[in-house]
Image (cartoon, rainbow, N blue to C red):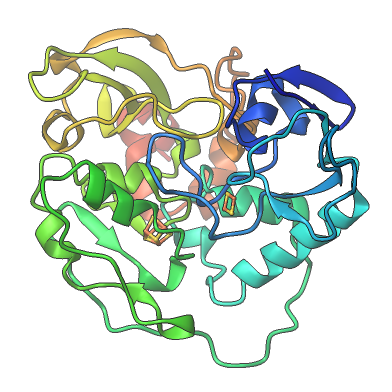
Length: 338
Ligand code: SF4
Ligand code: FES
C-alpha cells in the first residue's frame, strides 16, 4: 500500500488513490477544495484547477519535486510522495488566482441567488477572493433557455465544471445535453431540456457547485439560512427515499439529497421525492440535519437554542413594511390597536 504525506500527515492508501481522496481520508484543512470533481460521477475532475497542490517529493523511487502544481483530483499517489496543500504559499497564491479567474464571468449576484449560503464558489470567494476585480472586458451573456418547470438554468453563473452533464450521462437513460462550443463561448447545450424530463434529472441541481441550476419549485421562496434542514425518509420504489427536508415551521420549502462532508450527495434521489412531496406528513422525520461543513448556513448555528428576539413594536409600527405590520396585527393585535 503506498504511503503519502500531505501537509506533514502520513496516510496509507489503496494503490491508484488520488491525492485528493488520500487527503479526504485524513480530513480537515488538509483537504483541497474541489469544484468539478465529484466522487460519485465517473470522469469528473480536472477542469476547475482549484484542487492544485505542490508535490515536493515525487516518490521514494524518484524523489524529485514536480516542477508544476498538479491537480490533486486526478493525480494518483506514489509510494513516498510528499504533498503540500495548506503549507504551500505557492498553492495559496494559485488558489487566489483560480478564484479570480472563476469570478471573471460569474456575476456577483449572491444577494438574489438561491444558492447563496450553500455555494462552493461563495465559500471559496470568502476564503480566497480579492476585494476588487481587475477585469475590464464585457462579461459573457447568453440567450435565456427554458429547461422546463422544475429546474432553472442561469448560464451566466455556470463555471463549466461538467458535473451536470455527467449526471445526464450516468443517471438518466440517455444523454441529450453537453457543453457546446469552446472557450468563452462554451455553454450547456439547449438539448438539456430533454434530460430534464428524466426521473433523476433533479440531481443536476444538487451537483451544481454554484447557482447555475436551481430548483424552480423553491426559487425565491426563502434564503436557505432561514430554513431548518431535517433528515427524513419515505418508502420510494425509485430511490433510497433518504432526503433533507428544508422547512420553515411546518411548511416544507424544498427537498434535497443529503450531502456529506465534501458537499457531495450521499445518494441520488428521484424527482418524485424531490419535487412532489412538499408535505411533512409524507415523510418520517429522523431529526435535525447536522451541517456537514463550514457554510453560511451553519454560521447561523441553528442547532443552538434561539435567543428570544425582542421587537420594539412602537418603532416597528412607524417604520415597518405594510405587510409586516399586517402580520403583526394578526399575531399580536393588542400591539397594533393605536
Ligand atoms: S450548470 Fe452547474 S453543474 Fe452544470 S457545468 Fe455549469 S456549474 Fe457545472
Ligand atoms: S476539483 Fe480538481 S480540477 Fe476541479
